[in-house]
Amino acid sequence: MTPVVNVHEAKTNFSKLLEQAHAGQEIIVAKAGKPYARLMPLASEPASRRPGRLAGRVGNEFFEPLPAEELDAWGQG
Image (cartoon, rainbow, N blue to C red):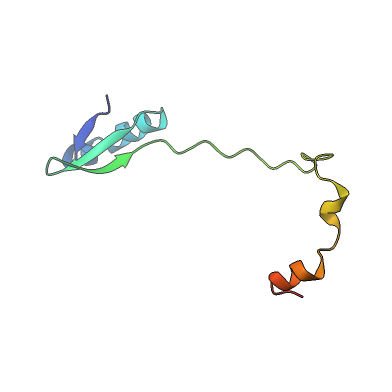
């Protein structure tokens, strides 16, 4: 169950709540008894890009110039 804390409690225990969120727990902050904000962990860092990852999956035709009618359709002809 997601804990709900009021604004005063959140201000008083902010460091503790941050640690809980960092550990993976989601916390709802309520104002006047109504859910107001969500404190949650950040998503993990995206995987780093790796050059050459798709080697052999893209055919040489991918690198050929586009036909004139397609270039015109893109407004670059």
